[in-house]
Length: 501
Image (cartoon, rainbow, N blue to C red; front, side, top):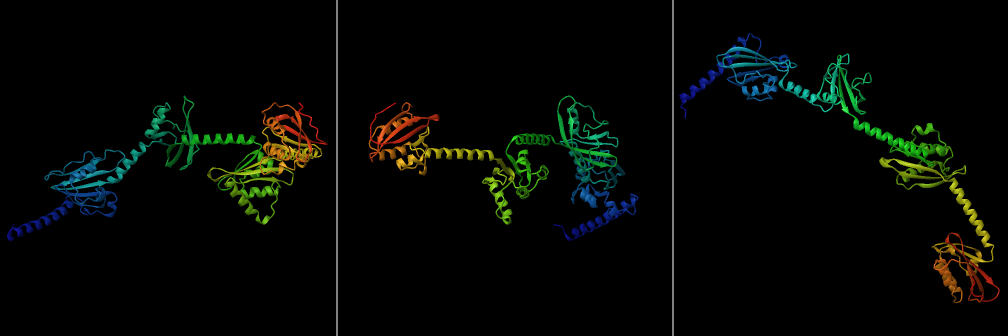
């Protein structure tokens, strides 16, 4: 423990030391020849100069740029400042000068592009360190930025007013060597985009290998500063390949669609016409100019209605609602209708969903099909009417044993009409009717074997007796396609003739 006298002595010594330090600081300013300059520099100086004041290797004062340079540390030592500045200034002393030294040391950055300088004023145990121009953080940021540009994965280069290469990064050098070129500096750039570019705009260019049939694609962006232009290139090979593949695919689809007789109209997710084929023009008679203008779904069908190539709506007031319902049904793949037009043509129209919300409408002219169907139906109806005039009952079994047709005489004889059956009417159903209406006979078993192909397919005839006593002649005749025609003739009296081939 210190007594009162010792404590008072140390307090007095500390106060005297503090006063002496202040006096020494003031004298130091006079000694450097800058009577108006102090450690607390003006605001203008703060923008360009960082000032440190060290005593015995310990920081005792610093201005704002200096604090920013040392990241605001309040207890910075000389060796700490050495670690910070030695990267830019390798000759910066690792230790503060001796107490007896009184000198001035000026240091320059090792980087010729770095204008910063350091001035060290040493007197006694006090040293004043002034860092002119850029701060350490700013310069380090510049160094990092330069390194990032040099190591960028894509070519970057700079040209002068005469389009000669004055600088390039490592990626440019590697790409130049890949093409077989030597040192590119002083030469014209390997990216020959001429006057295609505008400042700060992107242009796509290809660089061909001088010996191989290979082209490398890049997107190049430019920045002009004074008379020099900086170019930034990014790899666009993948994009170009995708665009070429897409273009080839679209061309293939277009050629395919052009050969179709079915009209095709594809609307994108915004419900605008994105793709159509020539058959659509032929079927809808809509002008190619109108279709090329990418009309909306409503405009498309409205124009078709005006051209009378779709059924006239019953209510024009609800026309938009009908189109909306049509689009919804097409989006779900549920739209399929047959349009009978005033011109006599018949179209089959269907809607199908496509990826990304698109929908496709298919227009098929089925007028010939409908006409042929109607013609066949008329012939069938004519043949049926002819068969109905015959007195003999006729029934035709297909190769599968189903009833294909019968006439009115057959229905009256057996009091049964196969066309009224709910399902397929076949030989099994007919045999039930025949057996129920006739006496027991082997004719039906033989007929069953003939129709089911278990017996030889030859024409034969026989007779059966109905429960009413009526004799009915039965004639079985094979016809084309594996079908069997059975003919029933009513006889005037019972006269068993036996089997005949």
